[in-house]
Image 1: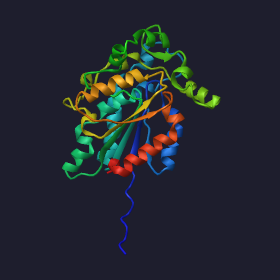
Image 2: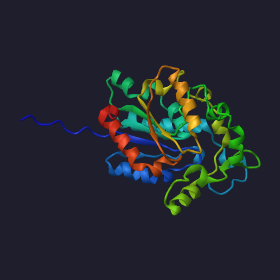
Image 3: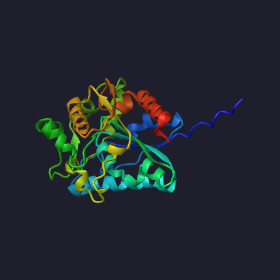
Amino acid sequence: MATPPPPQEKPTIVLVSGAWCVPAHYSALTHALSTAGFRVHAPTNPTCGGTSARPATAAAVAVSYADDVRHLRAVLAERVEAAGESVVLVMHSYGGAIGTAAVPRSLTAAARRARGLPGGVTHLVYLCAYLLPRHWCPMDVVRQAGALQLLADEVEVAADGGACMLKHPVEALCHDLEDPAERQRQADLLVWFPPAALGVKASDCDGDDGGFEAWREVPATYVRTTEDRCVPPAYQELMLKEVEKSGVEIRQLSLQTSHAVYATKTQEIVKLVEEISGSGGGK
């Protein structure tokens, strides 16, 4: 009787936070993925390294999109180049914008395989995230959806314009979380965020990889959230249609939930990541 092949080693998960969010927001998902046997890295975005207290000046949040991209690219390089690991990049909300920009062609699994090297980014998972062409920024999506005034009504901006915060965090982020204590915890964890970061395109970012857009070459899955009030279904549809114009097929999964899909549909996300890994997403 033939000896079955050894089980395929699971890929490393790099979990990219959204605007206003910190790794603690994703603790349930991180724990569930770790329990399922995945190594999980959830770095703090420099733009979200601040405080939940109101910043006195713009200097309190004196970092932006480019800092997030550089930081995340360094994390990916450490996992791929230094450790030779395969990586599934799981991105939430604004994390999709910086996550896409942080993946150079040289760190993709296909490019490394062509050079006889192990590891690389094997799959992109967008959790109600900004899936953008390199010449788009998150604010372009808001603008095209005709929602600029709606956004202005829902976000409090510091007097000097350097930082902002959601006015109604529970309603915006996690209105359908069943546990009242967890709803409040999610709201309390939010930090002030520089609104300027939402207006930067990948093509404007220092270190832009010659026009490379990771979703064109790396297999990708988009998780749509039908009750989302932060990145509403209209935003998601707009972005997916734009990508489809490029002739790129993005796998889609629709879940009836809010923006906090990582907390409300944790097991569904774990199941998705396991499926991706078993079907080649971890190779």
